[in-house]
Image (cartoon, rainbow, N blue to C red; front, side, top):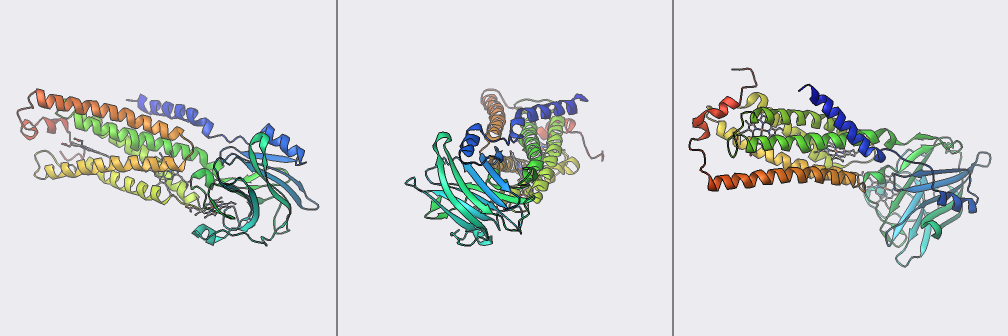
Length: 407
Ligand code: HEM
Ligand code: HEM
Ligand code: HEM
């Protein structure tokens, strides 16, 4: 038994290694983008956010005149689309951003305008162009660089003194739907929310990019939840369902059920605490459904774990009712857990590694459960069921030692 924590650590490190490409964020611009920028004399700095929408941002900044020349580009894969770049004097967030937005219309024509993004935008009011966004913007245009299939916002901005150029909050976004000159709401997955960073325009140093600190924790949260709630709990249920008495009797079923449920609960709870921490650290957005389902999962599995101390014996009158409740809550939890897994996976889109990893786990558990189920039915129909009832045989009580120390 002493090797199981070691095995677990090894498995987790293997998984982290497997998922490590998801943890790195290459920020060198592509050679194609740099070549195109050189043609328009934007040569000083360039950053690529590989994991946040694959955008590339190049700029020149002159401290004396405070002139900032920008080239901000991304692919637009849908028929219509928009690309936004802005600065926010109020903080590292969407609301308060003064944005330059380029729009590609149905007919392929390109339009561009300036926008003030306010609380109303977040609440769903139409985002309309604004003449005054508090910035002196010149040579603003939105172009298509055919050679690299990039749409690019180009502009020269004279940065007002209220903006600290060594700590500038840069915010960006890519969206699909538009209505005339109004860009419509963007997707609400994490890579669309990790779209702001504080940078030093002179040294190109990133002062703050919230996702940096959180990427490892998000991965750990996902892995612990998939292993704890998503794998160990169902495996434990399989032991209780098929090894208790029928179709197979194995005296260790109870110990295995309790072991799997306890280990799953501990790992899942650590994952859950990390989730709550991550949710609280994301000040400006929230994944409400995932949070509510996550809290329900934790609460009711905790209730389920009360079985460690409160499970009645087979000889107790109300044991049959306890069974009903424990079975019903147990299966309800397994359902809720798999729904919430997909909610969590949706947050991480378009990264499909999570989806396939979890579908793999579900598929494997499904094959095992269906095989046992078929075996149970075959045995039930063709072989005589045990003559004595479980209660009469007394063997179940023997296999279920008291865990509360009362006997
Ligand atoms: C077109 C109209 C837009 C709408 C309706 C919209 C709506 C939203 C909403 C509702 C959220 C928060 C989701 C939540 O709390 O669950 C959000 C987050 C975000 N949006 Fe937008 N958005 C729009 C345009 C933009 C633009 C143009 C930018 C970039 C310049 C942008 C950048 C962001 C960022 C970085 C976040 C992450 C949270 C934050 O920083 O506040 N959005 N958006
Ligand atoms: C049943 C399993 C799961 C439970 C109980 C759970 C629970 C939670 C909870 C309670 C939060 C806090 C939400 C908030 O306050 O906004 C959270 C956040 C999060 N979950 Fe899960 N989760 C589960 C599975 C997953 C999976 C499988 C993934 C991805 C592969 C995932 C990805 C995330 C991410 C990325 C966040 C943080 C979002 C942010 O930065 O604000 N979760 N989770
Ligand atoms: C989150 C934790 C747990 C979950 C999700 C869970 C779930 C389940 C489920 C779904 C079954 C029914 C299997 C079937 O179809 O026959 C079951 C059976 C059982 N569980 Fe748990 N369980 C948990 C924890 C525990 C703990 C901690 C104990 C004991 C200390 C326990 C004791 C039992 C017993 C004795 C049975 C067999 C009941 C019977 O006689 O049919 N469970 N569990």
